[in-house]
Structures are given as structure tokens and as C-alpha cells.
Length: 93
Image (tube, rainbow, N blue to C red; front, side):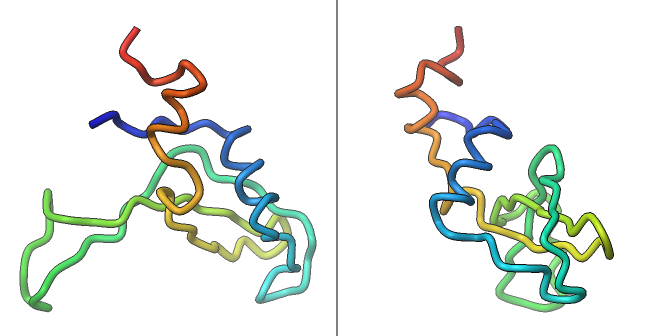
């Protein structure tokens, strides 16, 4: 399976296509920035489990340019590795 690579333009297009253009949920500002790279929400069946290296949900973070509030978006809901391969990216060459 191909790995997903961070592609700012592709992510911006996906966010715009999905209508994610509402003002900040904290301060009402309308200017945002995409944080470079992915973050990960770790998953566990037990609150006491150590989740380092375990399952997780890769996410894109968008930050409000005024107050800094972060909004996560599931990366694979926005961009799929096979879509990058169709564009000729992320194919190991």
C-alpha cells in the first residue's frame, strides 16, 4: 500500500471542495493556515494502554491565524494515497 505524502495544494483543494470555509469556532476569524505535516490521534481499547507505535488516525491540522485554535481533519477523508498515485506522485520514483 502506498504511503500518503503531505501535499499542501491537494489538501487545500480538498478542504475547499468539502466546504470547510466557516469562520473560526473560537473567535470568528476567517483566515486560517494549514500546519505542515501530519499529526496522529492514537487509538486504544484500554485507557491505560501505552499506544506508542499502535493504531492511529492520521490528521491534518488547520490553525486560526488570529487566536491559534486548531481544527483537525482526518487526512484520509481528504486525500487518499491512490489519488496521489494517479497524479504520478508518491510512486517511489
